[in-house]
Length: 633
Image 1 (cartoon, rainbow, N blue to C red):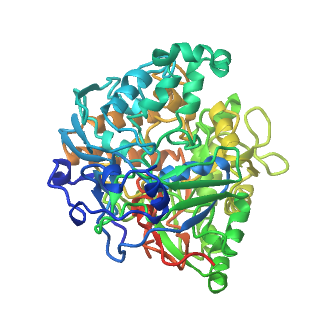
Image 2 (image 1 turned 180 degrees about the vertical axis):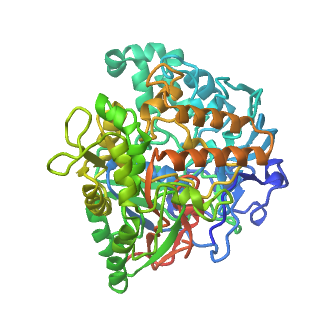
Image 3 (image 1 turned 30 degrees about the vertical axis):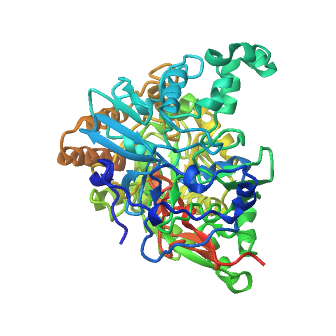
């Protein structure tokens, strides 16, 4: 059974309990550094590591390994070099394999009443270029980035605001940072532990050269700064998550040394990485990670041909049988991990679409309910998933303590007659050709846009196309590219899109329900509502749907709820609204994720949960502890 997720804080660690030591302070050097050490170009590990490094505890079924080797993986586009940050999963605090939040880069953190967070850094910790990592890096982010109007026109990140209130940020000494709010901020730790995390620090020693406050004279002679402004130059260099600037120091286990554009990215071990194994070996075990760029549609075939040592990205359940056939020949095994999304495949009507007629039709709940009722989910499940998926709405999965059957089934049982009745009530009558008409007389033709990364999505849409044709609605799939799709949704040009549903389908009452409220532009069903929230009303559209407004209020109430019972009640109301309103039309969930692992790659779990956030895909399983038993032949 999948364990329900909860934000659980390990009190002894957070309070700064006595740290575990590794081999009485004796450390084992990676052989990769032998020549640099002999030449005096690199200090010994004892001087490169923090005074108190993080000693990794190995989970059952894993074991300490050996240094060396190169890990090859495939990515579908150059931008996915950022997966090194996702998989590397070095965070101030992070989730362990049981989804508890524990210190990582931080030596400890003291959280009082979800209002005051006192963070202790590891003394002697260094950036990948050897420069000290101190509170100066936190001060630079807060004073010179988050509160600089040219770098952050809308002010500090919305993740740091509680009902519009910014935190009080203090730096008692070079190893201590304190964030405090007058009201609880239960999202603070999960944000920092995220797959795409809230970074509240920057490598100040590097970025100051691009900041007008510190380098105004140097910037005056910079051609880029003259043409686009110093802020644009600073933003170009400050890509901690994008990971596409090899010059930017990092705290991740591997450093990207390849500047884009490229069709092959190489990352090498960080000499100053803060984790060690129980025997004193500095992590990561693996020397290099190589990311080869390939067309997404070709990645399953390339993986089956043995071109990747570890692959799940761009592989779908329908590739499983093919991948199994290549195991013996190409020396790998294909595992099936569980997934935790509320919906593996979901339809997102764009409630902010520009077309005024469609704008009104999509906001009629009868129309959305009819679309959902018309889908034969059992057929989709049998044809594409061998009957192994769960049919129903985009909601929490049964392993969550908040799950209720009615949230999964409401308006999701195949009922063509009921769908027809709702469309008739909405005044959408059939024409002579059997296709229903919009109020202005145009035929109801829904263009459903996809990221073009999966033939599976097209296969599902083909089945839904048949279902909707029976109720008088035409569906036209339109494969695109991820960035193009998002931009068309954000601008209001896209009518409907396809994506996965709720990311954390295993949520507990103590997990934020924000995915259910219109607070992010990334939410494809109401991007302009989310943009309005994120910018404090400076852009986007104010929510004008009663249920969307209620969801925003409920999300705010959850943040201030004093008890777990109050939070659970809020969750249930929000889940009920979504089941009734069909803002997102879920189709199936519980679809297993194939994970291809080369036979010589050790410590990759046989069973795992493949999830974006929380989870960071492979991140919570600490790829820095993966090791290679013998090199590729």
